[in-house]
Image (cartoon, rainbow, N blue to C red; front, side, top):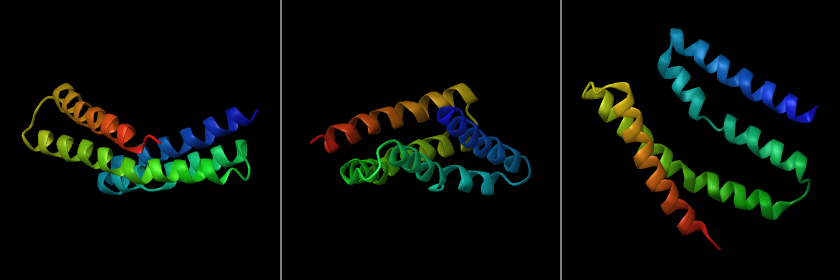
Length: 111
């Protein structure tokens, strides 16, 4: 039952964001990248592992440094859309850059 609640709450936020995006895309973008998603994940992790501070610290460290690959993804997508490239090209370029940055992220954060 807990997993269903997690899925429903997370799904509700995504749907809300897309509905807002119809009227105000920049606000939807802000909501999509705000700490709300990270907060939910942290709450779910904490509820599954209460008082595990080491896990919380590692999660926060990964999220903090994970901002960089996300910024690179959106920068590439932004630049590709400005060049009016096709959606599949935009997404492939964005995810390729994000994937490379995510690999570097994981290599740098290894203990």
